[in-house]
Image (cartoon, rainbow, N blue to C red; front, side, top):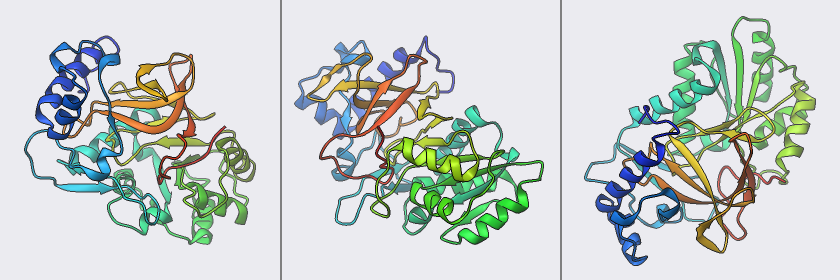
Length: 318
């Protein structure tokens, strides 16, 4: 998978599609209902993407294997959650490190300070599994999780600011807002990574409003963002302005809202994600997020499709 590049991505993806079309019972039935013949699919824009809602009601699995664990989406009270079966937790964690370090360098450069109270308060979070591994991989005695102890986090940041290591503050949006309202902290030499998530805790803000407030209170020029979800093994990262970079093993496509098999160029549409790391489940996921491509090859998240479930990483944007 890691040998993939722009020139061979589509070929690898089509071969994986045909394999999953035959060996993933749920995906196979879905394709049969659409009267799609996998052998006739030659290009990505011909591939039907599995609606993300299937992860809530079906066992999405390619081949026969026993799950080592499963990730469960946060959702909101009363809503059915998604479940992603994981064949190898070690692969997920190592893959997450590889993805992060592609954009930010070795985790050993950082003190990882995680402000993720909503995720810590439940079981089955892929984000908590990932960040816990990042904390351990950083090999810093100062790295760790913070629940609602903002005073301790502010003191820790002040203690570490003059050190040689970089500070990485990774937080859910409402908790970063709480921290910023309580303390005006100089994080000009740190990376502040928001991962979305008001989840009814705070009034929803656009991403621009959120980042503008955090920049002012933290003395930063940009706020970074992570785009990930329970149903995907890979993540995308924004290093400012809300424009996300993709790893070579991911691709996003933008579909017409009222026609899931019609694709758009240069206009906003529903996001379809190809994640080659989902080789044990389904690599072709039709999300309920809105977005559009950027000329630089990046993409932008514009929000949620109307009437879709509120997800853990929901954050309204302009």
